[in-house]
Image (cartoon, rainbow, N blue to C red; front, side):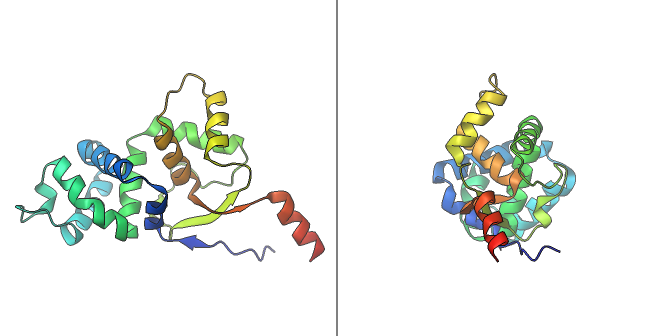
Length: 185
């Protein structure tokens, strides 16, 4: 029996890892392609917008143009973990090829992953454990070796790794160190 407990931090903790211009880019990409999202994702995002996002000049914030809605959503994205989860799942839904490649890549790196089709919005947040020696640069190089023709944006790759792995690099750990600690206990 494994006594190890998984620790989570709320989804909006990702803001500590995102540049403000990239956060806006993610929001814009979701709202610009909003009609391409599955119906349940559009409904979930719209429900959060109706409750939490105020767009000047609009009684119903969901009716605002994509750019205005995205800019008005930034503070909600910074403070509402459920909204972050819905936006990031929508962002990933709009990039099925990148999602699949990152899933396959992380699997090849022996990461413990949920199935790709799992709804990550149902989780309590991001796990905080991240394998040592697998920082963003190392992962980026390994991804480029596995997919040499893929010219994915560095920030998009990092965000997809975080989302598919459901991990933020808060607590870097080493499997070998962990095994040694368990053996000595």
